[in-house]
Structure formats: structure tokens, C-alpha cells
Image (spheres, rainbow, N blue to C red):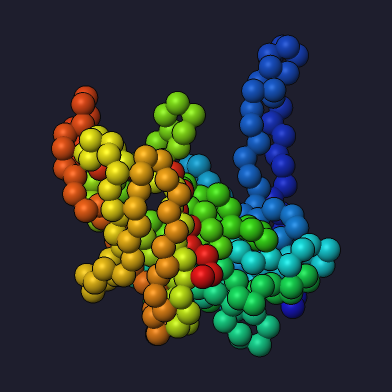
Length: 297
């Protein structure tokens, strides 16, 4: 496809009159170059991107639809697309399902964006070397006040990879998302984790009717007197679908039953008891999770 990208912005050199050579060199050394594009090699932009723009911090590109991503021919086949994006005025800034389409319009994967956020999209089948992918949304097309363009969404960054990137406490083959019920990500004494009171939610991409396994690295907290407990998994109807025993810091594997249908699935993690106050912390810290991941069973 022929690219309609604008020419890269030229670097403008400011001549500082009256400044000493030492001051000039010091200033140049202390200035960090800002990103000049939303992708890095070996990924390139193809057709249907608007001009590069920049807010106070980040560069981005607006898209009307079907923005093309092209990996170099020498790049390895990719299974995951990590993308930071945001719905725009063409969609009334409402949540969007961003589809990744391959050659001929085949659906490779999709991710839901509630606002500006980073989402890891699993590509199936994987994007081959020299293949092409298009970012597509259904609907949209509304006029933008003060702008002649249709701005359905904008992209701040996009990156392809063979393995899922380390993202918070998330690991595993499937790019799950954390939802409600989690305390902030934190690091203490060289360990990174999230504390949970109850009902920590995670969202798993549609399963296509196959069972999958959830693997957690979990430890009881002061809300449980740091004693062994049963960790339970509930589906979005409130039905318990799995459980595992946690003794001290434990790696627990549980099978998520197969579910028919094409929607993402929301699950909740809950301990069988807890609620005791934590010393010197206003939060209820029933258990903490170091990693969580979902793989094929």
C-alpha cells in the first residue's frame, strides 16, 4: 500500500547568540530528545494516519479508520500488539473496541479502550514477517468541532512482540486486564505485588469454548493473620468456578471452565475469610498477589 504519511518534521537548530560555548554544550548535554514517532523499528506506519502531533508530554497520531501497521520483512512473526490509544470525538469519546485486521479484513485480535490506556492485544493467527495489520473501529465518523478531519481515535504508541510484555503483575499467554478491587501496584523490599481486600477482578479474552488455567503467585496477609486460606474464583454471574489452597507464599494453579460465546469474561478473586485490620495501614490487606496469568489448560 502507498503510505500517506507526512514527511518527518525537520530538526530546527536555534542559534543562541551571546552564550558561551561552555553553556551551550552543557545545555545540549542536559536536553533529552523527545520521541519523534509513535512506533520504533522494526515496525513502520503505512497508510491512513494523520500528521504527527504532540501534546505537553507525548507525540501521537489521530486516525479516521484503518490505520496501517507494517513490520519490516526481516522482523520475527509477532503474537502481541501493545498499544496505547484513546477514543476521540468521532466516537463521542465513548469506549471503543479496537480491532486488528489482517490481509483481506481477517480479524487478528481486538482490545477494549475505556479511555486513554495501554492494552495488550493477542494476535491470532500471529502477524507474519512482512505482513500488514490495520487498526479499525466500527461506527464513529462524527464531525470534530473546529477540525475538518474525522478523529475516531488516536494512538500514542504501538509495539509488536513475540512474548507478552511484563505488565504490572500480569504474566501468562493471554493478555488479561485487571479491573476493580485491586490496591495500587507497589514494590517493597525488592518484591512487587498488589494487595487485595476482596473481589479483585480480572478480565480474560473470549475463550471460544476451551478451558484455561489461571496461575497465581499469592500470599496471605494481615487481614488473614497471615495464615493459610482458600482462594476462590467467581464468574460474572456470581458462581464459584474454581478454588485453591494458599499456604504462606504459594503458587496456585486453577482451571477456568470452558465458556461458549464471543465476549470477554470477568472473574473475581475472593478469600474464604479475612477482614482484620493491618498494623499501620488503613487498608484491609487479606492477601497479596505477585503474579497472575492465564494460559491454555
